[in-house]
Amino acid sequence: MELLNNPRTTQVIAEVVLALVLLVFLKTNGVEGRKALVSDSFEYRAISCRAHGASLEDFGGVGDGITSNTKAFQAAIDNLTQYASDGGSQLFVPPGKWLTGSFNLTSHFTLYLHKDAVLLASQDENEWAVINPLPSYGRGRDAAGGRFVSLIFGTNLTDVIITGDNGTIDGQGALWWEKFHKGQLKYTRPYLIEIMYSENVQISNLTLLNSPSWNIHPVYSSNIIVQGITILAPVTSPNTDGINPDSCTNTRIEDCYIVSGDDCVAVKSGWDEYGIAYGMPTKQLVIRRLTCISPFSAVIALGSEMSGGIQDVRAEDIVAIDSESGVRIKTAVGRGGFVKDIYVRGMTMKTMKWAFWMTGNYGSHADNNYDPNAFPVIQNINYHDMVAENVTMAARLEGIPGYPFTGICISNVTIELAKAAKKVPWNCTDVAGISSSVVPKPCELLPDQGPEKRTACNFPEDSLPIDNVQVQMCTYNRKYF
Image (cartoon, rainbow, N blue to C red; front, side, top):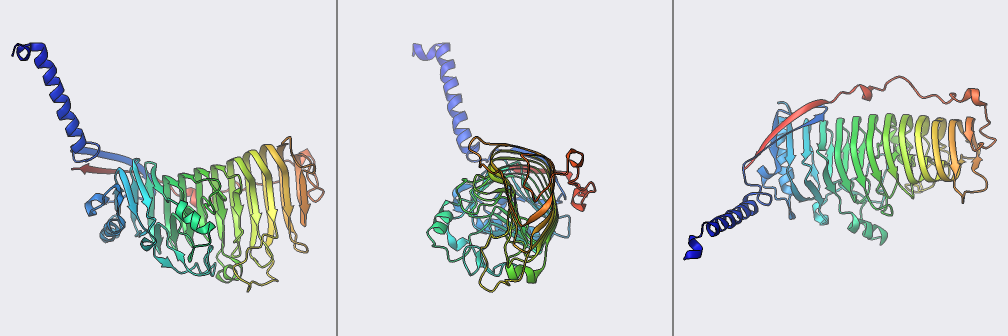
């Protein structure tokens, strides 16, 4: 009793009780339960702000990493569709691990991921619908039939935004990669994000992990901004391309960091006779401030599916690290189409196999019905103001016999070869163009015009329409109970 009557003992007991009460409170009402009243307000930049909003939890979402939220996502978006003509809507994904299969977006809509939110792609194939092949491809990329719908999918949309405070979308692709390698796929693997037949699209400020295949695929769309995206996948993962604008007009890709098992940015427009028939080029594309690591592929690839044409691509301020090639043009007899008016400047490359690579015999046809007389046109390709170090071979430029790649211009480029570099730094066949102030000296098919022509390779100074699209500061307020 004397011990209990001791003031010091009483203080210690009170402190212990207070600590236990606080611990219980935090466990049940704090980080785990998120049931304490916590005011959460944030701002973000977007092409459109929204008048209405909701949380995934309002529709039964459970962020435990185990419970499927596919129905919750679709119920939420279906409900918010009613506000499309009334200022638009936003779905907020709070902190947690949100397991989900594929879900469809709606117009005048924003999907926003909290910085501690992780979307986990379901590994249950029953949660992935099978849809038709793209009409400009004629078949799936992995299999002749259809394809699994992408995790986040939208078609025929206007004004759609997928953004966050660097929230995460994890494709959990290892299971799909294994099936691909074992030849067990009946359909083409899903992408993480695919937007089709849409306009005014923003995808920004997110981290994408371990996609089953391509990460971001806007197709048959226009007025697209992809900004502030981090994409990470094992460098040996199959076909985990970063960003693939496909038959799109007026696209801006900027401030992205990509580590990939395939091309970091692959510009496309359809495959062989299907792409020729569909006839929708990718044009007016801006790529800037991109950092890429891709040891077995290209930093920027044009093709190989380019049968609808690629025109007016402007890339600048690019950093390539430990990648197979800096810029690569991929095509073949039977592709048809064109790649022209390509401008790249301000590129820094470190540890590369090739700085520049053009391939006229890529092969890989959709089927045996391609036209053997469909020859691609490659012309007006401009590379300017570049430096590279630890490069195995400066360039491998291989056109098509009788149908050379023309109008190639390379100027003010310094390439430091690796100690184990090829003895012949340039390999050129069936190409034509000029060079100026290039080290090491290019091949004879690109004759040196002298230092006074170092600015010969032009870069357009006018702005494309997508550069005039402005973002605004939007505010969202949310209370957790």
